[in-house]
Length: 183
Ligand SMILES: [Mg+2]
Image (tube, rainbow, N blue to C red; front, side):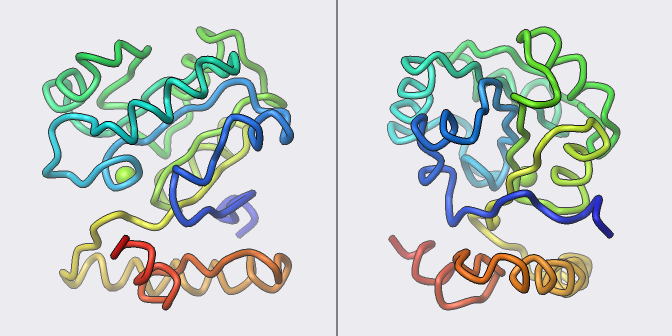
């Protein structure tokens, strides 16, 4: 179960500022794309993503994409950003995360992976020995498989919130996430 516990949860990637990353000792940030930075249907990064990535770069934080999606989607999303990228990353397998960490000169202490899925992103981070940050999915699906997964995630996050009583509740469907997704 510890492998599935996020180190930290955030309501959105936008809350993860360069200053906060610095404070946490993070210098290398591996990023999931789909539903973490943009919905599946959004082919290119918007201005907010661009500005956020620029602010990280200015602070000397190296970011890279680590996506399970296919090359075409990831390359198009990254076209104007030109970050280091791995598509078909097979998360939660940690191999590509470790490779990317090394490529960016990171180590287990100063690297984190941020994504919207516990069983993919958080698990991958922990198998790679790095920190896992969790955000709620930007657009949630409502099919049976996803509903089942969300139920499992809620159970896992229950334990997280017992320990982190002051953390915002990012569980899908919580008033906070509903409100956040609206804005
Ligand atoms: Mg995702």
